[in-house]
Length: 116
Length: 113
Image 1: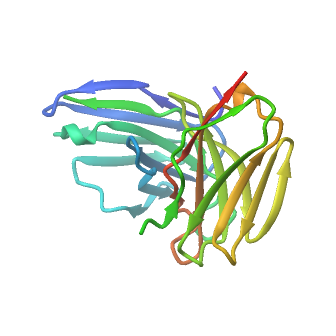
Image 2: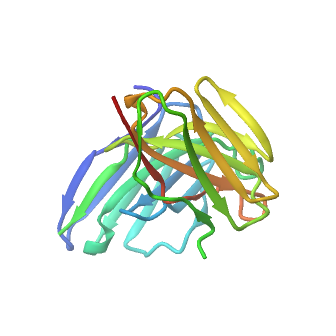
C-alpha cells in the first residue's frame, strides 16, 4: 500500500461502545495528524504528533484519546461518544515538523463515523 | 468573522470553461497557502502549495496569492467533468504554527459534459 491508509472506512457505534481508528503512513514522514470533518464546516485539527510525541491537542474532549506508537502509525481511541461526534475523521502526515514552513500534509481516505 | 472565507457553491460550469475558485482570509501572518481537491467519500488531495505572494502553475491549474488583499485563487483551465469535486483552501503561518492548517469550508464544483 502507498500513501496514507485508514481503517475502518466506516464505523457505526453506540454511545457506550469503545472503538479505535487506525492510520498508517507509508511515506517516511515524521509528523501525523487527526482532523475532524463535519458537514458544512471547515476541517478541524484535533491532534498533532511529531516524532511520536504529541505536540498539539486542539481542546479535544477526553472521550477522544490518541496514540502514536511510532512515526508510521496513529490511533484514535473512542469511548462514550455523542451523536454530534458523527463525522469523517481524517488522518494526515507530513515530512517536516513544526519548525519549518515546508509542511505539505497528505491525507488518508478517512473513517466515516456514525454514533447512534 | 471566520479566519478563512470560502463560498460553498455549488459552482456549475460547462466542460472546457475556465474556473476561478477563491478564498479570503483575515490573518495577515499566513505565509503558506494550499489548495486541496476532495472527491465524494475520499480524503483531500493536495493540488497546489505556494509560499507568500505570486503565481504557481501546474498543468491546467494556477494558484495565485495576493497577500496585500488577503485573497487567494485557484484557476482551472479547460475544465473536465473529472474536476467535479470540492476544493478546499488552507493556509498556515509562523504565529499560528506551520502545522496548524486553517481551512475554508470548501467550494463544490460541478463540471457538466
